[in-house]
Length: 557
Ligand code: ADP
Image (cartoon, rainbow, N blue to C red):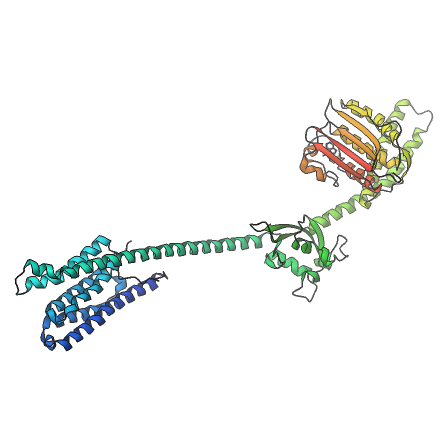
């Protein structure tokens, strides 16, 4: 609601709440009236000194008394309960008081009419519209001139009416001027108030967001740490404080990063401070799933640490957010699974060896019926596969394969792999092509390389489609022996490419299909190649096929 008829407003009024505003309103009314009363009183006293007969002019004194009374009322009235539009009555009564004294004083106090400037300014600075303010002041100042004229004894002539009209003109002009100034200052104040309100709102919204973020950060089960570009902590959530406490040496309540107990995968080798994940993240390195152990004894925890850098608007490094995922249960479960696999494989080995031995002994019997011998052959083949799988599991668990590189004809290995794979390929409706030279000398472990090639060839057939093809190739390149197995099969999704050499990994589409497998073949192949100090790479396109390339360096080349 517009505050029509209010008292003049102080230029630097700042909204400080409703109570403060009310007391300011009251103070402004009293001070405005006081300024007039002081000037009025001085004018009256001056008039009395100059013309002492005025002391007996009741109307003169009545005007002064009316002004004093208005001041007293201003001091005692409960302005907070009076609608602000009624405040306009104060300057109007002042007009009347000035008019009375002026009329009574007559020529004794020539400038007394100028006192009307006070109520004029008051009215002009109120929230009245310009036209209304100017009209009210013009009418009021004309009234204080003309009414005494009309009530006096002297005849009312045009000259008598026009002569003093300069004063109302000037007062109306003053009202216009003050109104324009006040309007502008009020607009500025309102803009200031609006921007203060917007600022308060955005500060409140910022605080609410901060509270929300704090609650979210303390609710998640991941430890989070944010550091600025200089490596100073700017945020640490509750979970991370627990992790930090668990990593602190006993008796040290405020350890630095270097004091923390951080160990490698074996849980006992300390990680040097300069290569610790957090240190590297602070320096701007982006980490993904780096695993460390922190703390000692029963409270030791396995953490998977990742980080991402923050950048300013201009792209410069602004700090890092590091996340700490407690993977203790997962790591312990994986260890338990490995132990279980290893134990079971060991338990399988002895009876399998015995089964194979007895099958082979039985196969040596001369008068074995043909059907029995062919059944036993199938049993032998499967027992050999099972034995191989057990050996692979044990080797994978031990983390290495023994390789014994000797001069070998790799051309022959590929020819044998092609001939034994051709039955499977034909059954799957595939064309199997061997482009490798008939003879290709190299220094490799013949058994292990044959195993690696067989794994890749088996996959190229398994993950293919009827009517497709598999191509083998090999050569001695500049960097060593190159063996390539290419297929026109289902291909591998890009996001799976970096995981296909992981233990037990099978791509999701394969897992739901009927294609058999356990996800160890590529890991074994990679381990064999690594034991030869070589490398294996893959290129693949979903729906088009894959190409696996083995590179084994050859001494003296
Ligand atoms: P397995 O074949 O027993 O599943 P591997 O370790 O040999 O295990 O292969 C791992 C996974 O890689 C496979 O499950 C399959 O998803 C993918 N893969 C391997 N070779 C190929 C290939 N030639 N074409 C398409 N996918 C393949």
